[in-house]
Image (cartoon, rainbow, N blue to C red):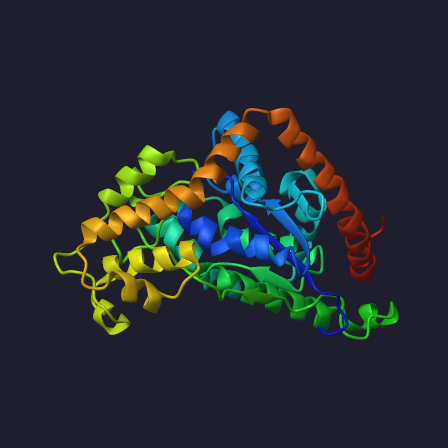
Length: 344
């Protein structure tokens, strides 16, 4: 991968409300990476339609993700912010990769098994082939690094497999075009960081999720101060006071989750949080956590609401981003067609 310039690609699906887990597990990383890398941040709307969507709600959700990116501190001038469906090369490369990837690889994808459940015969082909489209999203820009949550690591590993097989299958054609290190890089997942896995406020054993039926299971980025305060006050805990050391959090998933959230929002270590709050009852700690969350998330939610009130501005940013993304994607896709043997 040393012959490929470092480039970051990542995306978020426009389904449901963005929540604290999305923010701490992904968007905070995006904001930091823009300081050191060339970055593309995508609203992956083609992935969203692998499940049924109401068209008007989908359009609104696409704009909401873009608004969240900008409100959180991602600069649309320094970075490329766009929605996937405006760059047709994503779909073109996905089909090539459908012809490279193996059925056995896709059958092993745990997210497909989780989403399809017992009804896998009735889900869309798109849901099954989701990982090859994700591979196309990343490799279309020859991205070298992909900030993802732990649950997406398997998809990045499959992307590496697809890249390697394409490089092997077409090695002679690739070499003839002067690419001595293969045509596609093998991208690396970026998972490390604080609070990479934020759990439900109602069940510390489950990941915070947009699809959870209970609004009280998550803090949405769009929540106002009253909602944040109420949700944290009602967050599940246990009857014991907070421990003074990390060892005391073992077997206490809800306590561990709240300490982790405080740590990530405040930028201090969990050890320091326990040093400050150890021995206290949850009621006082929750109030401090609520105040911190309101301070950190309140301005983001307010700016999101302001931006969503100007959809024309959001649409222009997405259109401009798509033009910039296509300027990278189109030459790469044209070369893929040449390598494979397609006329253009």
